[in-house]
Image 1 (cartoon, helix red, strand yellow):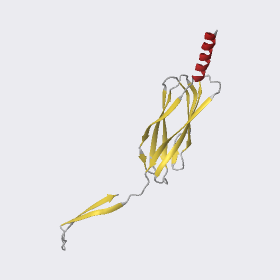
Image 2: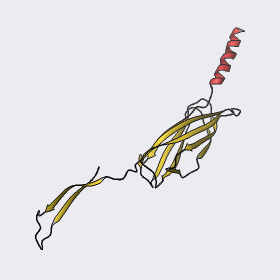
Image 3: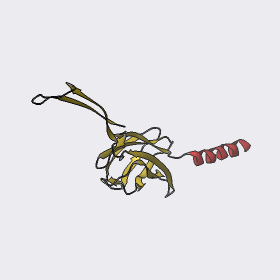
Length: 167
């Protein structure tokens, strides 16, 4: 009798630990640094590391700020993701506004899902990644000058070599 109760207790406890466990990874940000008016591509993978299938999966871009414009819908849906290592790859495309200023931008994502047949029990995880915007104006200066010949007399030509640097 004790053995039967112990088996039932173990079974009930193990049921509670069965779950889909989705993990999101940003696999690519291309280019790694963007300038105003450029486009940016972000590759994302979602992996089910759990021991149940996940269904009703939705990835939502929650906050992108004013400098980034998303070219797709803020929500991408995936019907289901099999248990034990199934992976889904997604791509988001962004455009950097002309008025963007220099600095890092944090993009916030939220991943929603249900366990297969989970009776409406929902899960969510928040993620973020950063985008580096290089909008700083160039600091250009003349760092050297050379003439050949050094002196110019009436009717002669001169070659002027100028070294320009951006610091």
